[in-house]
Each structure stands twice: as structure tokens, then as C-alpha cells.
Length: 378
Image (cartoon, rainbow, N blue to C red):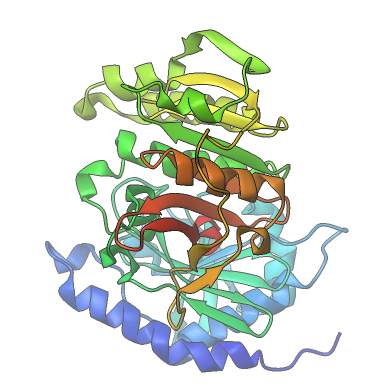
């Protein structure tokens, strides 16, 4: 393969530089704790290198790398190489097996006029520029948003010649679901490690298993949802599976350390795994799982959903009124119908191809609103 310049990198670099500069300048607190802002040339070079590395193979494996722009002094316990590596796709592919696990970044900084990979970092400062290879030809630009190493905000998704820059103002739209607000990263910092983030983790885990899935979240103080479910439920739980609910309720915020996060992750994966079974998984807003494999039926007296609003939280997107069939198959149709009939419910739908849609009722539009959010889950 002959390597040329990745045109998308040059096109998007100034916009991304402006984003990081704006947030760096507006960030509260000690500015010494913030990451340095790379210039547009550095951003272009890092994206270019990540893109071409993603298309290589190292012993038949696809390189999984994350490039972070910081100096060794900005990370505690950095792993420093005696001889820095060039920011070169071949060099990145060779070292990829050492850094493919989540939370490990290749540190990039300038040595004179050139960019080099100085080593590896596990902890990075706030607003640190990160270019991550998600899949071959798919690069996600993100930044760190808090003390928890798992908390990142996606800034842009670059796939081939497509550029999707996340719209920071999408969370201010009327009827924006709490889940979408949290995914966009503009919810309260107090919720980043709390139970408000559980649905985000569920969405990520549902997408990862790649079998497709449908999760219905219903109010915990109502049984009206039963009118939209074929009885009996194939795999009803008795009593409700409450591990996730108990973890989110019983542990005080101050005690939610690594052990709690690991326990939450295991419980989240267990619930997300249920969604791989054909049918819907039912869960209350308090995270009690009521059953899975459920079949959705149109509520008596309710019309069939013929149209809904479709949006994606990226710059330049315009809301479209579409038939639910345009979004996918049975899962999408069932989710739209359920939310239409049970307007205090939310439905999360993962497709096998990686697409992810959140369905919620919009009082402002008086119809179901489908939010495409896969760009926020990468």
C-alpha cells in the first residue's frame, strides 16, 4: 500500500484545534493541571499516522492504538523509552500489541520541530487530545474530562472520507434525554461516577457484543408497561434481578472507588448480555431487571407508528421526519411503537452493524424522537 496524506486529517485539524483551545481557555481550576493544546499541524500529523496505522496488519492483528498529546511530566508513572519512536504508521503498528488494552496511550510530544512517541501513559490530564483507532479507517478524537480514567468526551469521528464533529449544543435541545446529555459529556460532573452514568455504560456494553439488542427502561412506580408486552414474558425474573440496582443505590458517592466501578462493570455486562437474546429486555428506571426475551405488542386503542423524528448529535445534522422502517428491522419498529404507547419509557436499540439509537417521546414534537448516538459510544 502506498501511503499518501490523509486529506481528512488536514481538513478537520483546524476545527479540532479551535475546540481544544476554547475548552482549555474556559476550563475552571488550576490551569497547570490541564493538558497542552497541540497546534493544527500536530493534530493533522497524529490523525494521519493513526489512520494509516489502522490499515496495517501486525502478525495478522489489526492495530488498536490510542495516541495522546502530552509530555512525560504530565502523567504519573510514565513508561519512557530510551529512544523515542518516530510518529510513523509502521512503528505504531509494531508497538500496538503493548498498548491495545483500554486506558493505555502512546504519549506523543515534540522533540524540537518533530513529533515523537516518547512512551506510554495510563493517566492523562484534562482536555488531553487523544486520537484513538476504533476500527480500520475509523479514528475517534476525544478528550479527558475528569479524574476517572474512563471518562472521555468524543469530539469527532473520522471514517474514511467522512467527518462527523460532535455538536456540543445538542444537549440543550428541548426534550433531550438524560442519557444523551450524559453521553455528550455536559451533564453535572457529580454524575460522572454515579448512577446517572449507568445507562451510558449499558449502551456501550450492548454495542460491544455485536448481536443487536433492545433494552426498555420503564418507570419503577408503574405497571402500565405490561399493556404493551405479550404475556407471559419468555424469561421473566422472579424476583427482579437487582444487583445493578443495589450497587447504584447502596454505595455512598464518597465510597465509589475502583472496587465499586469493577462491580458495576460486571453487573452492566450481565444485563447487556441479556439484550442479545431475541426480544426486549425490561428494566426499571431504578435498574431492576424484570425479564428478557419479551415480545412487544401495540397497546390496545393505539395507532401504529407511521413516522418519527430522527436526529444525530453532529454538526450540520438536520432533523428528519421518517418512517420507523428506515432505521432498521423489528427491534427499531418495536422500540418506536413501545415508546409511542408508553410515553414515560425510553428504549435503547443496538444494531449488529454498530448503530445505536435511543428512542424517547418528545412532548414538543408530539411524536417519538429517535436519537442516533453511535458516534458517542466509540
